[in-house]
Length: 468
Image (tube, rainbow, N blue to C red; front, side, top):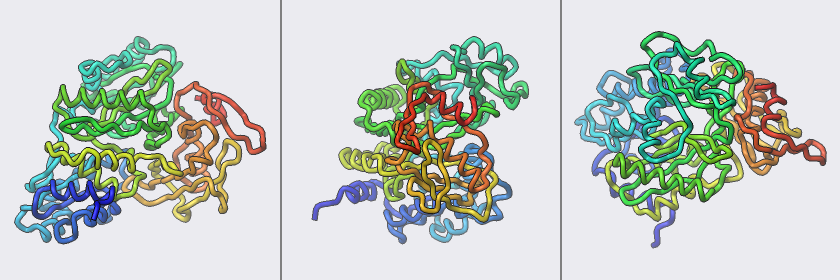
């Protein structure tokens, strides 16, 4: 019998994984179930960090970096000191099982079991925003002008040097610490001094300053294999400004850009450069801004990212397995990988964005939505989207699902995403606060609640929700 498109890569992966027992530690319970389905319950023990006992969560975690640090601390407990050790040792008392830690999990300590797909330190280094510009220069990727400095004492003066009239973005990296995740450690300002919340301890911080770029935030991402690069479809990043704080809310990536040929080619070029210059294999992503003069990079991730969070768990797990095997020099069937990528990232009828809140109305958990012109309103019969609120290690996780064919005309999610968080605060009692659209001046189109159509720029959208 011929193999189906979805079981062909699965069969290949099971053949390439080391023989014997496998222990998987991942973030999500649905992913853990998918790992067990892929490898079988007698061969695989899959543990989800989301299932951690309540006593291990002493407080709400602030930001993606703190959540990842908490996850790494839990995995270090595989040495016998933590809650993961009990089920792992019962399943594998002689420590001969292979340990699988899908991205973004990359702990410095994880017990004594053999791990597959461990990232070399040199790859991880370039996730540091104060280092990554050397990678763009080595790979011949055009970038914006930047300044890297030790300390935060002269930010106003240094910012004035890089400011091109639109503002400044400052990334702060604690000396001796690992790279931050999400939007942690990033501030921006325009037409004024730097935010007072930027840390100022002498000798503690390195900073990178660059111009605030106007355009569409996007992610170029792909998979570097031993013989070629498999580019993923470029995606729109939903990155929203917090005007009162001078920070950003990163709400995920959504498949609204399609297969833009020039961006796909640029992804393949970057992946090839990584492989040739660093011996790089595995998933990678480059975040940046699609400006009027082209794509300019801002950040690098030496891993698979959350861009596939909305895909079914069985596809995410297969792609995670391919990624880890690629790092160890194994290569599943290329055509099967390409087929898996297409199914994982192809735009569907909905798009999903996320947000973590530290406060919410615990009596509410779901709200149906409809568009009233360019505003979202709660409506029990609403068919344009829904908000779902669930407890998490970071307090409350908001998952917003919007029907793509019901979005205000214009094609992108970012200009309208602040409405999601506004209605969440109003209907679910979350505390996202005032958020503004991305810094972009290209025209978008809003659907009116009547038969007329209103056209205005994204900058005007921002002013409608309060000026940036």
